[in-house]
Length: 105
Image (cartoon, rainbow, N blue to C red):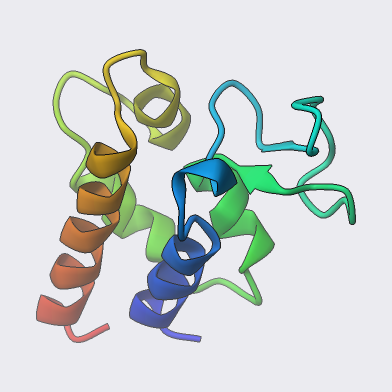
């Protein structure tokens, strides 16, 4: 899988706001923390969605890291920040996808 494909798959997991969470990699329908690959998981953070859709070393997270707004350091920090909205999340994935495409990935 290419980085672009991986980023698109992860973004698709987060296809609506109810599929996104903060403060843990995954949650069940009651909002309890569960493992990323749990069959009970219904919502994921950005990094959880990346892990869920991972099928090898695609390098996709590098592109998310490169387009994180300053001063955030790392995917979880930006995902979990109180100021990060669902629309911010989608735009962040879109910027990463465009960067990966420009890099021929």
